[in-house]
Image (tube, rainbow, N blue to C red; front, side, top):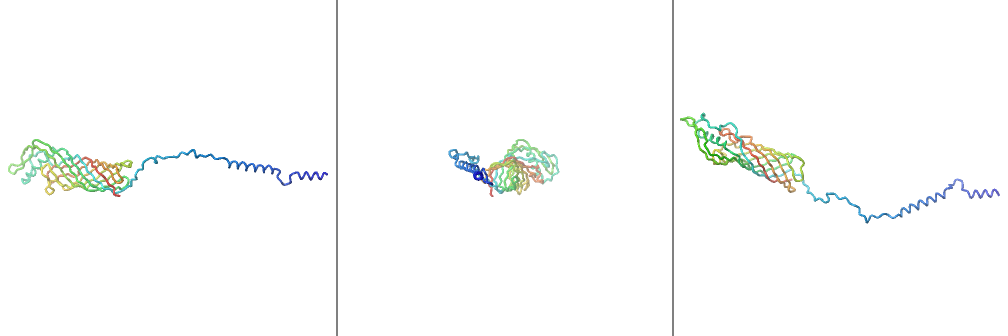
Amino acid sequence: MADGNASQSLAGSPQAGTNERAPASAGSTLSTATVGDMLRRAPALSLAGFPLPTAQLSADTMPAVPVVVARRWAMQLLGGPAQTFRTLGGGANLEPVATRNVPTAAANFVSGNIIANALAKKEQSSTGFGLQVQASRMLSGRWGVSAGLGYQEYATQTDYSGPITYTIYSAPNGPRLASREFNLSQRDTYRFATVPLRVSYALGQASKRLRYGLLAGTDAAVYLGGSTTRSASSASKSNSPYRPLSLSVTAGLDLHYRVGPRLEILVQPNATYFLTSLPKPVSGLTPRYLWGAGALFGVSYELR
């Protein structure tokens, strides 16, 4: 009887080696699966009725800026007025000379030069102008060079009324003073064909349209003729008291304003000074160094 009760007790108790919490674990497993299923079946929040904001850059509303291609070669056409004058140097007398050892054959020549030298002091500045055609090349982002051909006219104005005293040389009586009345209003011009050579340097940060810088260079100037204080008529190259070739230096500003993909407007305020005296040393005329200050205006067309 006791054995039967023990067997029933053993049958009703958990077997050895078994987990007596197994039913609870099974219940926990079912509970987790149920929760996961519920989460999967949870309704998702729909944002279809609420459009998301979009970022809009300023470039989306700005007009497109044309891309400017950097080109190295350009052709330039320039022209403009200048206020021109001269600086008188030493080496010739501006005042009348009472005695001078000059051959008789040169008497008229020397007397004429003394009159011209005296009248030179009465000169005033006048307006000239210049033209240039140049080919330019950009060497880097800032440096550039250009060369070409040009035409330049310098001028002075003489308005004088009064006596001019000078020296007359004659063999029998020797040098003697003379005086002559003048009522003169004359424009004296000096015309040159030039070969301009320029170096430019850009300053500051260039914008899409405007760039500016410095400009300097030299001109080889071939004298073409013009009217002079010695005579109201034109002085030809073959019978001229002036040098056939002179040298001048130029310095100024270089302004560019872009108006198209290849086209620019140019403005070049500048000043020019002759390093060589225009009259020949043997002419007997007072050395004169021409100079001018003005501005050149034109266009630049980029080739490639």
